[in-house]
Length: 377
Image 1 (cartoon, one colour):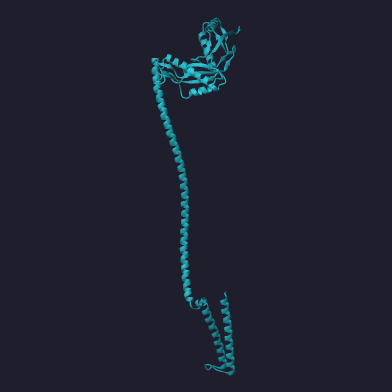
Image 2 (image 1 turned 90 degrees about the vertical axis):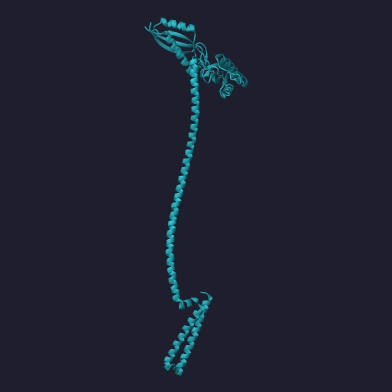
């Protein structure tokens, strides 16, 4: 409560006290002088004065409160209007609450809808991501398929070219026009170790020059641009040169035909390099075979042919490089002598192959055959 409220209450108390005092004084005088108002007896006149005094006090109090306070005026004179307004406001509040409930329900529905849409958005994003991944995979598959198609087309073209060349080769073989077959060795050489690059290059070029002369003798043709009959495929020459320079041992160098070469065509070749390692020592027993001879039934020539074939297989397995399909070498005198001995023997016989000299990768496999007769009663 502010200061004006205290002053109002204090004023009402003072005024009420003064009026009560005046009413009391007036009542006593009326009682002493036995005055009469409205023809009432003095006693009742005094009571009437007390009542009037109380009414005046109440009236002044209400008047002061009404003047001083708008709330009192409203309570005294605007209560009905205020109640009607309160009822109207209460009704409006109820309507607003009802509308608020509707709005809240709508808001809740919207929130649920938003949640559903957000979930759908997440699902769509996930689906989009999955679809993008699938598209990437499909694109990769398409690229792979395109690459495979291109490779297959290249392979088809290569196979068609190879087929055409094979057909030409077959015709050439029938007509005797193949001068060099694929992988046929043209010549070989044994290069010493420790060659400088210049010497190694000169060595390879010398082999190519010799091969060029051989190719022309066999019927190969020269290229029209540089008048050469032998060419090395791709970067094979540089690779062979590098390997020859880096080698710490003697190196076997072979120049072989890379393709079937028809008469009149240049020869496409490639170098093959191998270290020249020792395979067998001189006098070493490298092969042994036991046979049983039956008079008039054993085929000595077939036996010797099988032995030479097995020696050839053994040499290849041990690392000896064959030349023109064979690596074994037995002197004609030794073969004749062994054949004669076998014709004179029967029963169990042991045939040994002895290395005649140190045998290296470059070959050949020179051996002598020796016969040992088992002493069986």
